[in-house]
Length: 161
Image (cartoon, rainbow, N blue to C red; front, side):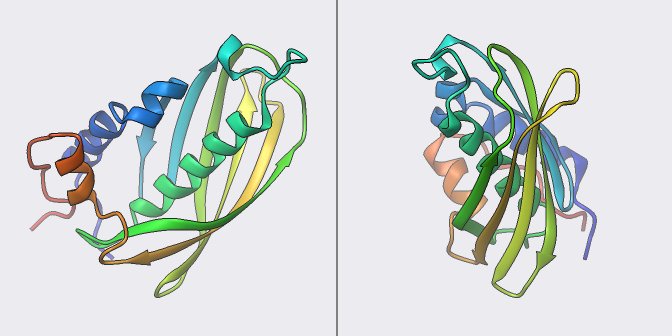
């Protein structure tokens, strides 16, 4: 597999961080690599449940984003993927503050892929963990669709010539 063009990775990070769902939750794609990624979020009151702790759905969203973007670096130029399922374990309650989700590819199959992700607080405490199955293919949310939807200029090539 070819190494991802760093200019492409930077352009994807910039594009995805302007996407509606990331803006809604104040999620940021921080780092994008081949088989791994880092996503961050500054948890605020809007992420809390009625009891003052982080809502499990906020953790699930961060974990899903981390698993998805970890796989992106291993996809072909205009291949995409979609989450089939995600199994989330909420391990520790938290409140407002910065958290980081890391994602990694465990196994890349031809079409079915298995990833995992975890969310940690600033002290490194493990807050949530997930495993996820994703389906990869040429017509499943390719990057060209995000470029069109978000009105972006063409991205640099994903892999060097």
